[in-house]
Length: 432
Image (cartoon, one colour):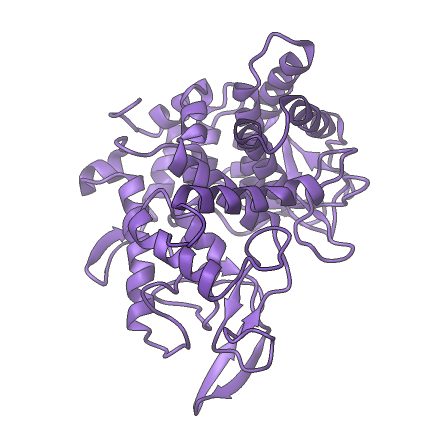
């Protein structure tokens, strides 16, 4: 990443530090909950809170906060989740060891009639397990962190979350019961299945993982053969915690690659798609890509340069099949850094120095931008999201750290539940 003043490592460190500040300033110190989005009266996201728990060890190592402050925040968060109401009431915090997707920032109760989310609970529990491994000192506070992290993980009833099906359901609501959708097709549920398989108390059966991988789609796009998932984040989130280099399950053994290499190929597919730019969006190119679930300019159809273009708000954008409306998410570029630094660093350079997406922002990158969307937004690169999201900031902090030191990967290698889950899923080789 070229800069007159900063080396690549210094530039990454600055972006990492700015992104981490979200978790310092957009959380409730009384319960540890992290707000989903920087908008007024917005609820907390349990996934963002899990990312915060994983980010505190990085912050200690990088000098962004003291160990004592990180211990205090971590303990507050874990105590809240352990002691919060678990039950079938519509205003509880969780049920069966899982938690509602969105929680009220102050009370910690279910917000927005949201679902009890299996995958967001997985991110929360992965953050808790990270804390339990990192905080290893022989003090009463750090011992309590380890005890609570373990207890929270053991409480999740993964078998219940299957609802008598082969795969795991997306979630549950108190009035209507289980959601009709299940985790099928390759995506961020890789982490969910490994955590579920590793549980010592309510484990998923090995057949659930076989059922999940049987729904995979292997594709050839722009000359790359890979396990398809459209949005870029689906190739990243499980990799925050688990080092998939050199370990393979049955599916990947048959293909002769691993999930890390698959994510590298998916990252290249993103760049190739932007260079081909089939829908002729403004700005797309070698250094302007990163299409994922993100905020957008709004749901409307507008004629741009003689072409009818459909724009969206927050949707799961993906390549090569869409949806795509010209919206780029720089956080998703940063989160691919471990996989393909040779194409990620120039793209980050473009976002920072050309589009100036970190200028005058408290937390690094704004969520997304769209050069195609017409209007005067004070930026020659078009529409820029006014918001920051916890779900964007966490992967920036954590994947930059994995690129620089591999910290998260090293920590979770020492988690017996992760190792057990991987082995029960059929993984072997490498560090396993």
